[in-house]
Amino acid sequence: MMNLPQGPGPIGVFDSGYGGLTIYSEIEKLMPQYDYLYIGDNARAPYGTRSFDVVYEFTRQAVEFLFKQGCRLVILACNTASAKALRNIQQIDLPAMDPSRRVLGIIRPTVECIGDITCSRHVGVLATEGTIRSMSYPLEIKKLFPDIKVTGKACPMWASLVEADEHLTPGADYFVKRDIDALLARDSEIDTIILGCTHYPLLLPRIEQFVPKGVKVITQGEAVATSLQNYLMRHADIEDLCTKGGGATFYTTESAERFREQASRFLCHPVKVQRINLV
Ligand code: DGL
Image (tube, rainbow, N blue to C red; front, side):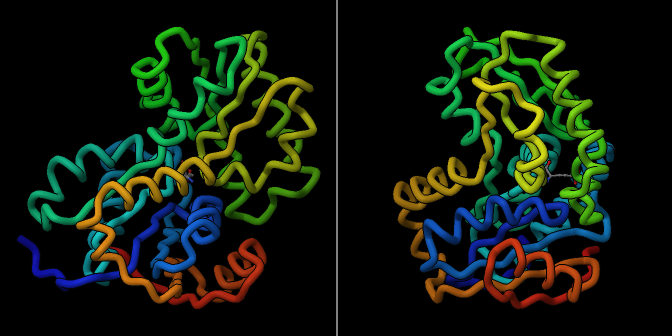
């Protein structure tokens, strides 16, 4: 077993970059009492076009870093990492690092609410290439709602637009419209679109202009935060190990200055940021 700090610690939140902030913001809103550590691996984002092995390796490094900082529970606030690394981390790494720690993904909690939302039973998923190729969404939805037809479309540029802070420019519209049109052309009965990448809610104002009336656009933050709250209620042993000081520290593998500016703008409060290297 790895030599890790024992005793209580903050809740870890991990994403390839800024996208996880759309999950973190809802967690912070719902459960401000806990301490949090957030990692954005901005220097190596986007993850969406990377291979299984690379996403797994980068995610494992981030989880190990968060464990070494004392986290007992880590949320992969990244669909690509949840799709491509979660299972290996839970089955191979946790037993070797420390089986008492927990790592949770965000695809399952997103999918759980879909059955009550779609009327046509035709659901679209917009996500990174990695998430779409993994088939995680259709497989998870099928387990819970076998009657729902799922159509996925990869949006290879969207996360990069967010990372480059170009997501609210008219230039972003070209890619946003192109990918939404392509999804709806594949299945015109879709009445619900899941934004299956945590970066995409940052594009919401652009997305909403191209989605026809009557088609609902689903973001993940609230569902993930509620699911985490339920998890902590059901697992008192883990909850006891989460420190409750109401503080958050953000780590980025790129410029701390830039992360501070983006994160404080999005979260509407100042944030403490440190630059780190993940190895
Ligand atoms: N935010 C991530 C996700 O939810 C990954 C985006 C990327 O780095 O390509 O999939």
